[in-house]
Image 1 (cartoon, helix red, strand yellow):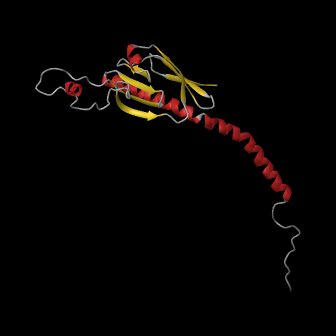
Image 2 (image 1 turned 45 degrees about the vertical axis):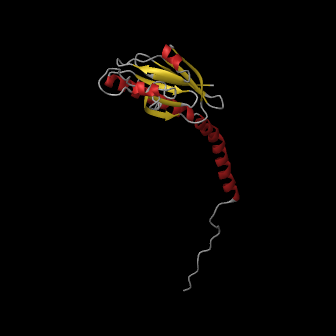
Image 3 (image 1 turned 60 degrees about the horizontal axis):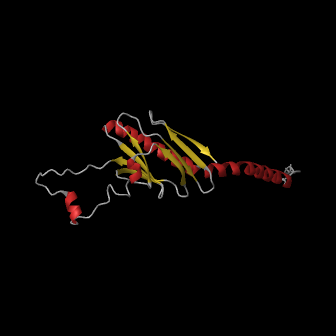
Length: 197
């Protein structure tokens, strides 16, 4: 007996119509999702900067309570660097047998190391972070003090040992005009933010 192979009436594979339908579905899904992802990518820098400022503020508040001292968060609106620290210890002028560093600096024997200068808003930097490129400060508001007038290129927020802090609002925008507005509660230190156009 001779065995014969069964004949196939149909070949396996995709037809041209099936391939075109799949491509049409992919194009439709891409057309719907690309604007959504592009919008969320544009807002990523703003979200990242608001999270950075929020984390810095929470850290400053908890460290101020723990150390029982005032800590300051400063934002350099020219370089978009945000940092925190405390006021540097002032040298005493008591005659204790040691050379007074302040006198030596005034006489020109030692160079100023830059701490407490205009590049640090009068505070010792402990933690610092640069915000993403392309962002600028649109607006900043707080209860201004004489210390703030001393350092006009910095926005300073003080965090006190009792858990309270200076009230402020800060608006940051990107090159396209999309922005985020941050506002804090001076009692709890909690920062809320919302996106603006």
